[in-house]
Length: 231
Image 1 (tube, rainbow, N blue to C red):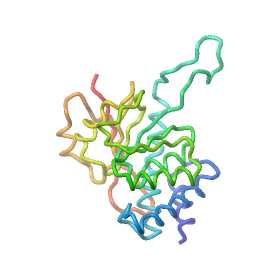
Image 2: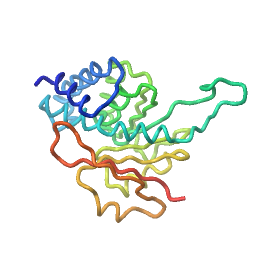
Image 3: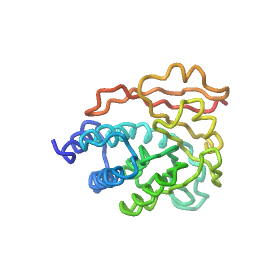
Image 4: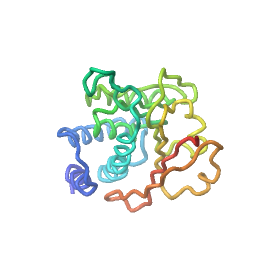
């Protein structure tokens, strides 16, 4: 099966509705990742078929949960009286921490062009790739930051903070807590259920949901852990 066919079948199996140009952009991103990977070693996965399942479909499998959380998120800027339904509203925001080669941030940005996505990584060669991907894929709603996440101080917090193999859960929430906006949540992509990490979470943080993900073409266990501050 070609990468194109594998991606199309995987998207159908996940039941996702994506923009018309999404599959083309996802495959272009994969080709760019493969090209840069020969020099910069952005990912250990090098086979095209495995990259579709382990990177693209693995990232997209979490999309319905992102959508549900964003739909339920209270909007911070409601329109004032007399304005239109969308007046005064800012788009939802997400930050991908330790983004590396852009996973899951770039597939998320391709799938949801209405979402303002920020990718942050402390390694300049990785963010150089992310900037190139932003340009070549025409992702104007994507921002790239080269910085340590604990030192990054944006003007406003994010609705969602996500990571994929960034660190254990305790370190993840501790280093990024200042980035969480009102009503925001953390979403950590994990393999096996991280029972020990959950037991060691710092005070003031709880697991609000645990989703077992079924990724087409991927046999390994995958989970998406949703965390939030304790009120």
